[in-house]
Image (cartoon, rainbow, N blue to C red; front, side, top):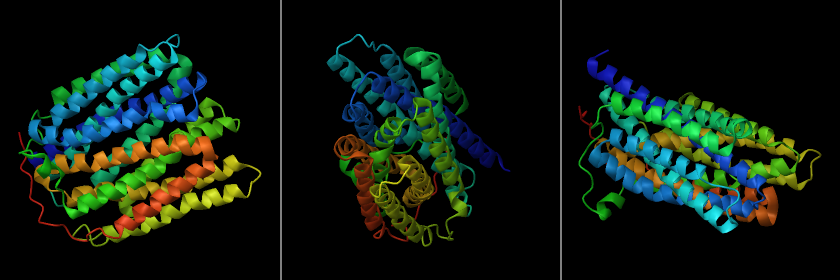
Length: 420
């Protein structure tokens, strides 16, 4: 292995490990907030509201984060994301149940917004680094980019599942405030590792000079962004509020609910990592992968509709129907997500990969925002069945958009030059 290849592989491993640490604490944060405020008696719609600014802030963070990563380098933006998450944890740790309801909700909403900025700055920087490090490692080796993307996203989501369990465990063992302090300390160590291990200017390129240039993406990326809005809205419309509240109301404990969400997310991550072996490959990286995205989207759209239909017949154990159905959903969703994450890098130009990825994941955050908003509303007025039907509608929209995806890149993809 050449020195450049070894350096690229090393940097990929460091970025992946740093994002693992971030994702572990981010998953734990969701459970800490959800369970703490559910115990305080807040309604499903209010619980969803607590996460809205978290997702809304991520939309802007992805847009500006991609531009900043291209201008100042991926390492710097990854560091900024980690520091911002630490600040969000410290803000949340100041919360007191003795505060009035308005102040409490406002403070948590704003602190969650800080964490939302942190998450998407970190995500954009980390996923952009895959394109850069893959190019540093030699570039264009058949199938390597798909494998690296799949392993990164799959292992990250498995780690997020562990984070869900960790959040419930921390809440039980040390409580809300001390749990946040412990996570802030762990992230500080991760941040030091990034600062002293990665090239300071990795991924630096000439950033877009105007907002018009920043938004003017290729047809493939624009369509993928639209599909991503629907795809992740379809997950979060049941995942964030509907399923946890439904399972708890059905007699499950907080620990059981957290364990289920953890196992679901870990399983989803493992399937994501294995996606390259489930999708037909092509030498050009698009001609087989794009049709696969279409078929997997259609199959996924049918799953929540079938679960809702099964629940409509009032089965003896609705929770069993839901858990089994969502396990099937998780497999199909994981493959869809992995293929989409690969395609955005396949369509992206290496020189401005960070901007392309930032634009795409702004759409990802927009989808989560819409899904969370719909989740609280639909569950409040129609229960888990309404959430599942809302998911099905979004997924059929996703499938329809993928029908227009191009099977070849808009222009040749330039080879990125490594920045020392």
